[in-house]
Length: 192
Image (tube, rainbow, N blue to C red; front, side):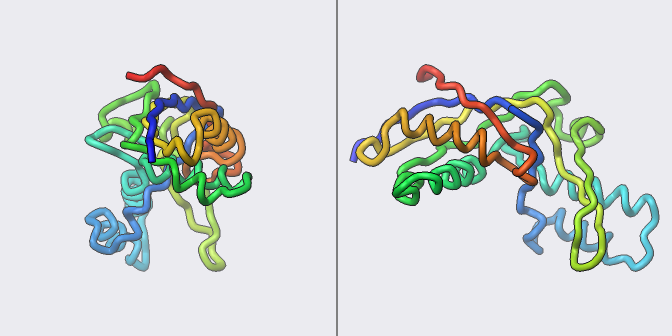
């Protein structure tokens, strides 16, 4: 089976709301910090601010100290786009995103400074059981990222890969609350 590679620039068509899954792991240090604060019966305003800070950092997709789109998030958007076509599971299995796609955006590159910038915070009330609970997520209004993709040319061709990524960008999106957020356009780039 022969494989080929391509580079795609994903460019925001709307804001991106990140939702890393680290806080679901009880062994994660941030999850333990969050549990300690959320377990308090009476929370102060300082506690609520601390919860928001921990949620923000725990939901940020990062690689080597930089905000990024992880391969599994990009692949999931592609997989969901493949479901709009016949033999979608086969097509999705033939495509792999090689590495995290580092995010390009206007704003602080240092994650500690980024975490304090209100322009990069999304806060929303969500229903948890019967109560409304505030949630804080990283938000990037204008962003782009270069994704390095490998595909099995015997299963799917280059044009199909690009077309399905375009469907992923226009109809599926990446990140949290994808009905409204995480949409992108796709540019085919020359090989590096």
